Length: 191
Image (spheres, rainbow, N blue to C red):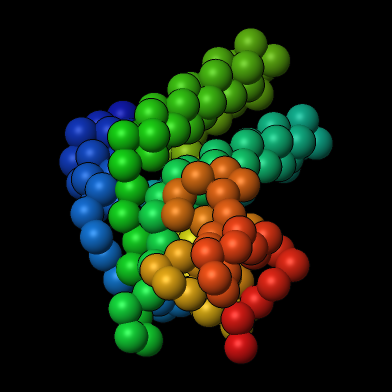
């Protein structure tokens, strides 16, 4: 399959539907956050038969590593914009306009990375894009899972996270503790 077809399907169909889903309230589970990154990795290697060959040079590996770090950073940044709360034993998340803005920034980061690779004479293809997607969705999912207490055993209290640093979708936000006192979630966990 031509790589431009893969890019077109991702940009026109897949990415908009995935971003739109993040703007709706949805349940978060470890299984759900693992599926999408795993699918992107599989598609990256299956659809791009030249990926392994392109990654046989040190500059290509360095560019891939830099891209994966950038992908992870943008994923964690997007997670910080999302509200995380628990209803019963279920962790729920919901993004907002800032989440969408950071998705646009993520796409621009990827475009810039591709431009830099080509300027340096390092060819890139759909495989690298799929690995970038896997890393950014994976980092976002892990950050949300940590905030929701799925990784650390932290719990949500009063509708806000008490087991993680990023609360209520705001960077450095604090939660209300007993008697309404602010609580630094990094220092205090409930139960």
